[in-house]
Image (cartoon, rainbow, N blue to C red; front, side):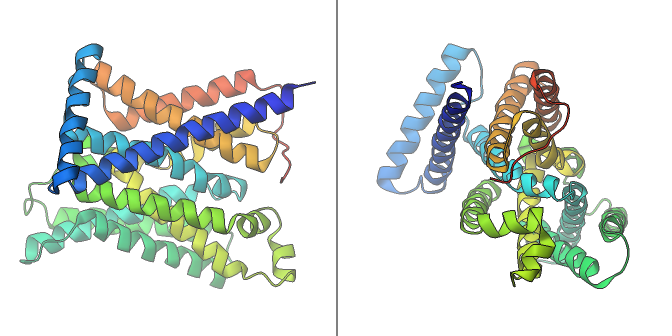
Length: 338
């Protein structure tokens, strides 16, 4: 009889803890960025001492190093915003869009590499990927609005086309740079630069704020787009907003998960949540909880076993999905829109 209130309380406690973890992650990135200032510098030193003690008690060599702070903090933020946006995508049967935009962002990395190698101007590869990813998102939306093909055809065209462009540019510029492109394909904590981590923090705050502000509108178009049009909601604008947010999340997550695995964080935690959730809001909360479990568990496996971080995160996410299936008492995922 008390099962529903108990579930709700547990979800709220879990989301509260993740909120605290996110604040700590953003705080660490802020301290890292502002450490040259007097008082912040003292906080930075104290944080490194705390990391040293944590390493001492855990028997690791991780938490003392600022580059690991950046990687873990970036992962924590990915574990929040990827399932947050992915919940809308999965319920709109647009799971493939994450993979598409990851390939588009890869083309952006390739363009950034070639530009840096052939000119005297240095360019942030993450920023290049973000710009190209957003342009690719707008391109997918434009094709979907103006063609009579099935909904997944523009997505498939953009996926293959952008990856083809990326591979051609990489092949053309081979030997011009010393950057290992495999890090961007498969993900690596070494790819997370200070600038990239700070950009991920800013984008995460922006994505969460936008989703909170437009929750009702996005929910409306997710479950009944035709009714939203009848109600004179600007469906095209909100569709574009959703797909641009997806591009932003994909580019940020690509640092750790890589092009090939990035779509998993948009889909797998949401798939796990749909097995046990009974409403859209509950799915949203549970997907973030599963996303955070995947990130924390993946980092733990990666650090303890010396395995790639991206693959470890995805395997833990799939394990959560299988456990959710085993724990589910339903054979179908019929949920309420509340």
